[in-house]
Amino acid sequence: METGVRLTVVSTQTEADIICALLRENGIACGERAADMATYGTAGFGGWREILVGEEQLEEAQRLLDTPPPADE
Image: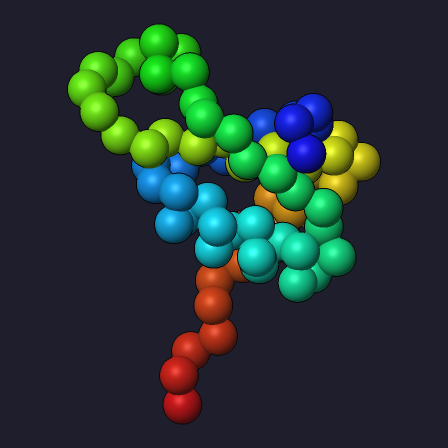
Protein backbone atom coordinates (compact mmCIF):
# COMPACT_ATOMS: atom_id res chain seq x y z
CA MET A 1 0.00 0.00 0.00
CA GLU A 2 1.77 3.11 -1.21
CA THR A 3 -1.31 5.27 -0.86
CA GLY A 4 -3.17 5.95 2.33
CA VAL A 5 -2.82 8.20 5.33
CA ARG A 6 0.05 8.20 7.77
CA LEU A 7 -0.66 6.36 10.99
CA THR A 8 2.78 6.76 12.53
CA VAL A 9 6.50 6.98 11.80
CA VAL A 10 8.97 4.49 13.27
CA SER A 11 12.75 4.38 13.29
CA THR A 12 13.42 0.89 11.89
CA GLN A 13 12.14 -1.58 9.33
CA THR A 14 11.71 -4.16 12.10
CA GLU A 15 9.39 -1.85 14.03
CA ALA A 16 7.40 -1.18 10.84
CA ASP A 17 7.09 -4.92 10.20
CA ILE A 18 5.82 -5.57 13.74
CA ILE A 19 3.21 -2.81 13.58
CA CYS A 20 1.99 -3.89 10.14
CA ALA A 21 1.72 -7.49 11.34
CA LEU A 22 -0.38 -6.35 14.31
CA LEU A 23 -2.63 -4.26 12.08
CA ARG A 24 -3.10 -7.03 9.51
CA GLU A 25 -3.84 -9.55 12.28
CA ASN A 26 -6.69 -7.26 13.28
CA GLY A 27 -8.08 -6.87 9.77
CA ILE A 28 -6.50 -3.51 8.94
CA ALA A 29 -4.73 -3.22 5.59
CA CYS A 30 -1.46 -1.35 5.87
CA GLY A 31 1.72 -0.53 4.08
CA GLU A 32 4.95 1.25 4.79
CA ARG A 33 7.48 3.34 2.94
CA ALA A 34 10.66 5.26 3.58
CA ALA A 35 9.97 8.47 5.46
CA ASP A 36 11.27 11.79 4.14
CA MET A 37 13.79 12.71 6.84
CA ALA A 38 13.67 16.40 5.93
CA THR A 39 10.07 16.38 7.12
CA TYR A 40 11.08 15.21 10.60
CA GLY A 41 14.00 17.59 11.13
CA THR A 42 16.59 14.92 11.85
CA ALA A 43 19.81 14.19 10.10
CA GLY A 44 21.99 11.15 9.77
CA PHE A 45 21.40 7.58 8.83
CA GLY A 46 18.44 5.48 9.82
CA GLY A 47 15.63 3.37 8.58
CA TRP A 48 12.75 5.74 9.30
CA ARG A 49 9.49 4.30 7.91
CA GLU A 50 5.97 5.70 7.58
CA ILE A 51 3.12 3.31 8.36
CA LEU A 52 0.13 3.90 6.09
CA VAL A 53 -3.48 2.77 6.43
CA GLY A 54 -6.67 3.52 4.55
CA GLU A 55 -8.39 6.68 5.73
CA GLU A 56 -11.52 4.72 6.63
CA GLN A 57 -9.47 2.54 9.03
CA LEU A 58 -7.31 5.27 10.57
CA GLU A 59 -9.27 5.67 13.83
CA GLU A 60 -9.44 1.91 14.38
CA ALA A 61 -5.69 1.60 13.74
CA GLN A 62 -4.92 4.45 16.16
CA ARG A 63 -7.01 2.81 18.88
CA LEU A 64 -5.21 -0.47 18.32
CA LEU A 65 -1.79 1.14 18.66
CA ASP A 66 -2.88 3.07 21.76
CA THR A 67 -4.11 -0.08 23.54
CA PRO A 68 -1.54 -1.34 26.04
CA PRO A 69 -0.61 -5.02 25.77
CA PRO A 70 -2.18 -7.40 28.29
CA ALA A 71 -0.28 -7.81 31.54
CA ASP A 72 1.53 -11.09 32.09
CA GLU A 73 -0.02 -13.17 34.80
